[in-house]
Image 1 (cartoon, rainbow, N blue to C red):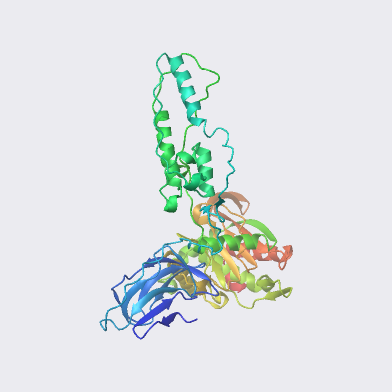
Image 2: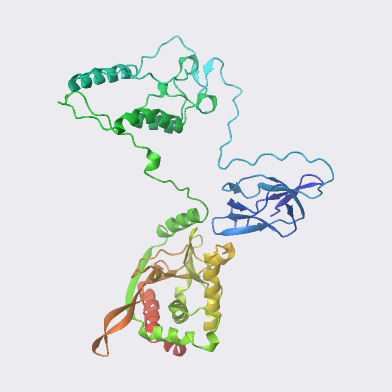
Length: 483
């Protein structure tokens, strides 16, 4: 799609592009330029996070940055202008750039032309109509100060000293025309939970609206005396109850917006778990010979410069098992009610990153030699850890491996990557007592778990694939005889 527009002969605008496959939005993670900076064609100006990955965006022309339309942390729809460039600086006075749009700030609704006159403005609807009818005051609203004074007097009587004078109520802004205080529903609920009468709260929001901070500020003075230790009363009056402690809700929990990669992961996992009927099978296997092979490969000159670890041999074992059981490498086409068998293997490797779990895949992994597979695995892991995995690298996977053993976990029941037929979980490799050649000996042992889509992979096929992987890891020479 076109990502730039020409507003005049001098200024050009760059739009948020679709950097993936049909993505609709992206979050601006970081700006690498500021207004007044000189940029050249191909220079990276910002980093954005899509539903799949973090991507750097290059500018397609030369010039001077005139305006950044959105600040960092803003989610921008594809097609929106994010930066304006002065491609002919010095040719005249440039208009002052507009301030960057505030992050996630909802636009104010235009005032309705049909709004009836003579009503008090409120947050929703036309407001409160003028009327001579008087509402009955809410129960307990006006009596709250008197009740507090009586309670204080009773307590003072029990303690044997005079009751202190009631503190003066804070000045409150009187709502227009005697209407109810202006506050959003969440703020009203907060005030109710904290026992704060909104009529006593001084609003600081726009147009006299009471904010959450105003409610907390009103609650703080009431909570302060409760923090000071008081002498124990001689007796407790049954009619006087102790006021509950006021605890700030923000100090007890943290809310993290779900967006970008994490949002996509959540949606994909829910869609996969409740669409594909999962079946998981397990097998525990002696991988002592595989660990010896890994040690030997690390010394092999043909493997010099590439990453060699147990995952490499496990990946090759899975590829051989798929070659022996090609029906497992398939996808379910819901629209056409067909099983689509794949004659290629794009091997996904689940990777934990600071932005969440991602599953890039090695394209045409079935055609790669062991050194080529090792090189591809190393590049995949490095790119994922650096947060540079592209959306294309995560598209088109057919089967996946997730190595939960790196966290010391024995095994798990992995959820299928959306659109794939199977996922193999590899547990921690540990030294355990094992019966080997009729004797109990310490051996390197791990547990494998294979989850598969039971619509296209039945129990027999899934069992064969898992058994083949286990057999290869137990006797790695089968990589040669079965390949």
